[in-house]
Every structure is written in structure tokens, then in C-alpha cells.
Length: 364
Picture 1 (cartoon, rainbow, N blue to C red):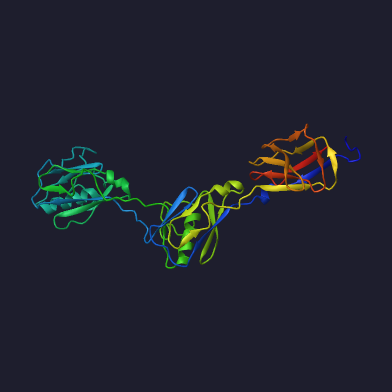
Picture 2 (cartoon, helix red, strand yellow; picture 1 turned 45 degrees about the vertical axis):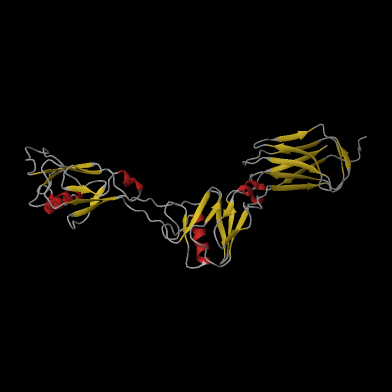
């Protein structure tokens, strides 16, 4: 029968879950010897590659060569989006803006014609209207280099593989583009998530920290295109250790991968560890038989849910209830248990909620 001499328990439990949410961590340890190139480090969804030298972006290019016989009138050369036509005389201007763009004057010899084409590609002011036609503008995709040995190189103005799609063509028997393809070649993109091996193992750890956090060093200690890791940050750094911490606190951080196949470097485990939900605790000091186990919550204002669990003094779970975000109360009116001194209730949040939140525990 009910022990009427035991009054109902009605107390407010503060839990400050936002400030006490624990973030998972992981430590990368060096044996003080620099790692070999091509080793990798994975943190969450990103894999970083250790390299002796960062892969530099390269602009695509092409080489146009003359056999030193002059070109024929009407023949054309394609350079990316522009098509240039060789002519014996530039079209006469008959009125305002009545010129024909991209005409190139045939010179007294093959090299002069090639130089006039270079001027047209580059938009050289001195040749405008004399060695190439009015209305011709500098090629927007490519620039032309110096004529040497009856040849010159055109180079994409933008580095990377984008230039490998730029067209190259000619229909004159005395001109020839390098290679057999119809596009420029050799463009190379920057490779994201490369980390430069430093002068020492300690410097390499510094470079890893900079790459993970996206701080100073882009293009020198780690590659351009590398962005800050969205799941972890690099925190405490020493000569032989680098600590990483989950950006978001709680148990979710324990599933963030931390693996490597780099020599002289090692993670302690294959995932971050130590992330935990935050807990508020109320321990009973009196004995008594209760009919009802109730908690009344103010609105939970974070993104987590709260588990309300009743344990006996030995740590055995007796009953649990779950409160979702913005839930104002939760209860189990049918559960009965005899409360002993030392029994307790844990309020555990799966993610951060407001420090201002509190729970009113009601046991009647």
C-alpha cells in the first residue's frame, strides 16, 4: 500500500546542456620522422594527401609552326573562339565601323605573316589597322608568345583544364599545330586537399593543422582549392602530436572517421572518440513508494532530444521517457516503483540545447 508519510517530490533541475556538451576528439601522433609522399590522412569526409610539392595549376597551350613558306590568302587559323583569316590587303573601311575583324595581313615572308598573327591574337596596339584589321580585339582565351624558329606558343589566359577544350585549327599547308588533336593541351587544375611535407615532422604537423582549419598557407603549405574541414578543427599542436576536435558536440562526433596510411603518422583509432551527450542528474535522498513518474519541461530550444531515465542506486535502468524538441511535458502515469535513497534520474541531451532550459521533476 502507498506510504502516505512520504510527500511528493517536486523539484526543478537545471541542466545547462549547451555548455556541457562534450566534443569528440582524436590525436594524430608523429614518430618525429617526416612522412613519405603520397600518404593520406582522412578526417570525416575529407582525405588529405601528403606531397613533396603541391601540384601547380598549368595553363593549356599549343604551338603553331610554319615551314617558312608564306601562307596563302584566304587561309584561316583558329585560336580558341577566334578565327583569323590571312589576306593580301586589309578590307578597306567604307564607313564608320564597316571593318572586318580578325583579318591578318600577309607579310613579305613567312615569319612576318606569323608575327602579324601574333599581333592580332595579342591585340598589339602598334599593328591595329595595319598588320591586322580594325575591330579585332585581343583573344579573350589565349595569348601568343614570341616567334622563334618559325613557331610560337599560344597559352590559355586561365590556368587549369578549362583550356584543354579550347580549339586549334589551320587550313594552310604551310602551317601546323602541334599534336594530332583539335584542342589545346597540357592544362592542369590545382589539386585540392594536398598538404606539403615540411622541413621537419613538426612543420608537417603545422601544415596539416593549417589545411584542416583553412588558415594561412593556401598555395604554399597546402593546395589552393582546399577548404576548411566541415566536421573537425585542428586544436592543440605540439612537435609530435596534433589534436582534432569535432565541430559539433555530442555523440555524433564519435562517428567521424580518422584514418591514415601515411608513414610515421598514426591516429589512435579509426574514428574520433569521447563525444558525449550532456547530462543533468537528480538523486533521491528519501525512500518511498510512488505511483507516478513525471517530468515537466520548459520548451527545449536546441536541436536535441532529451532522454529522462530513472535508475536505481546500482545503476540499473528502471524507466525511460523521451522529450523531443519544443516539447513542454512528458510523463508516465502508469509506472509504479519504490524509490530508495540513492536512486536517481538522468536528463541526457543528444545535442546542444539552451543553457536557459530547465526541467521540473515531479514524482507523485
